[in-house]
Image (tube, rainbow, N blue to C red; front, top):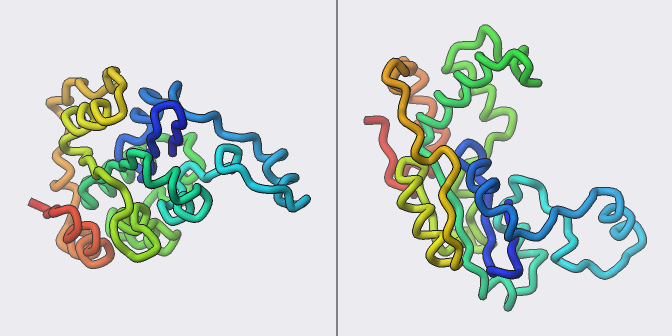
Length: 210
């Protein structure tokens, strides 16, 4: 997540949807993330909470910002998030975890099929993307939802809105011609389970497997 007072924006970071690249690009205009110890002591002592000093989790849902940031301040911010095709999102992360033996969850998913991995992530608490950016009324709370599949153009739209001119790291990287199409990684069961478990994202953002 990123909060900027100088350029009045809020970026809600949906996991595995180019959030790290966006954070690198816009981080210098964002408020620094407070250290955990002072934030914890402040809560224990019952000190007044300044939203600028609240330690939001990296993937905090929009409802938490809604709760902690004054309504007038939040309403004047340009609020945005990026989402990704749920099937591609799972295929990409599954491949990454299998390749990266140093990842803390590599041993947990090693040997799982993609179908089993989908079930594993769902039980682990992988949240529906739409729920992360929904407000307390259940409606989408951000002003703009960009798509990973249209990353460069949508990020350019964000930059125009917040008055910053910067290129997105790796946005123009050439695709690997030998890379396996993510659709080929799914059998019928895995395809169906993603469709069932993440139907809300598929409907809300117009995604399909094909």
